[in-house]
Image (cartoon, rainbow, N blue to C red; front, side, top):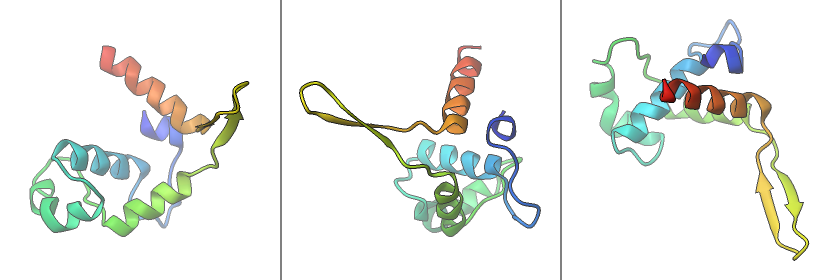
Length: 103
């Protein structure tokens, strides 16, 4: 599902988008607050998890930056500004995950 929506990383990349997304999910589900928690507190436990390639915090940050797109700003009639992400691929991934979660 992740590769379908986000595509593949370059051939020379050590980690896939799927690896990075799994690391983020496991990080936050384990109570981590930031990418550095993987290295500092959770790496030994994550290394024991089947089918998980543990990424460094730098790798996570680099991949997230590569996926970033500028937000679109809309101004309401009342003059309030609202920012939205129109990242087509990440929005599609979110919708696919919602469909799978409903199962």
